[in-house]
Amino acid sequence: METMPLTLDWVSACTRLACAFAAGAAFGFDRSESGKAAGLRTTILVCLAACVAMLQVNTLLTLTGKQPNSFAVLDLMRLPLGILTGMGFIGAGAVFRKDGLVSGVTTAAMLWFVTVIGLCFGGGQYRLGIGGSVVGLAVLWGLRMVEHKLERRKVAWLTVRHTLDSDCPQRLTEELRRLGCSLDPRGADFQEREGTCESRYLVHWKEEFDVHRIAPSLQEIALASGARSVQWSMTD
Figure 1 (tube, rainbow, N blue to C red):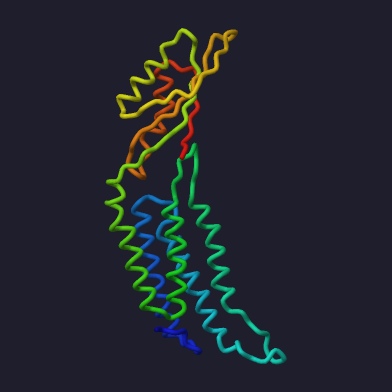
Figure 2: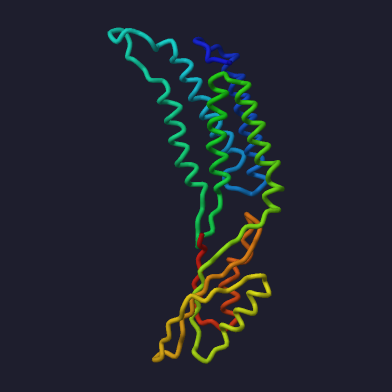
């Protein structure tokens, strides 16, 4: 089992930084290739930041275990734990949600994972860092094809307002069925004075895990079917 040495020389520090740079670049290349905002530079900086934090811990090791009247007693683990806590803010910024469509979760998880890899390299645990990087890259690259082939059942609320004499519900049902969707009516509110009706539906369909083709087109389809106004949102 590799342990963190009490003394740190420049050769070891540069080797750890190089390993962290390489690991961050490998994960960042995957995100950049996928067109994600947190790409190559972000991932490298995150991994290097974690590595530098652990290098600082290594440097301070010689100050621990001293008598309280000679040196302050240090809890060195607070530094890497603080890095992981701060990583949560960056990860939260990578997640984007609109109308129930969530994206960026994989990028956020990858940034957190790369932070841990950087901590491993910064602590001199080369085999653990390299092994973790290999497994992490295998998950990102190897399981991507598997995940793309999986279909997931998706559900969305759809509310349309149309005139009382409109054939909007029939046309909407036919168009969505043509796309492989099913509609589950969930009530309607009639405004006799305005001559309109507000109909609510649950729309069900199957789609690839990270593909959002049907949901963004719900509004366009409903308007083309004769709806005056449309509201939709994803649901679990």
